[in-house]
Image (cartoon, rainbow, N blue to C red; front, side, top):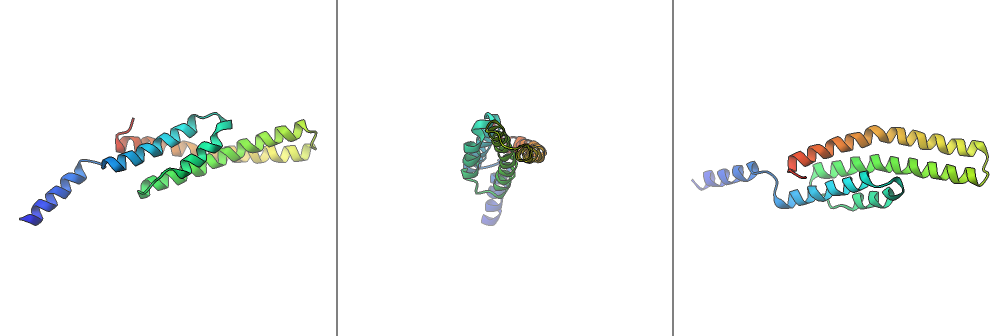
Length: 133
């Protein structure tokens, strides 16, 4: 009888959805992703570090955190290479150096785009699963 009651209690707890701690952790991750996505390019690097530092103990949250950090890491590097190319051009660097930096920036930004979209899609799933705003 006790085993049945324990099993029923466990089933009810599982059916009620995530715990408040799980929801808080998912909410913190989602907010970190939103802040990073909505920041101007010049402000993304520190927010990328904040995303990486967000506490994620659940495997699915950690996977999303890693995926989004990888995507935005490429984006940030691409933007940094664009800025570096502009600075070198203004300083009179040779066209080959500037061209190589711009090609690297374009490559990183192009590779980041579908990864950022996937991050956004998976964040939307996270919001639905944890009933986040």
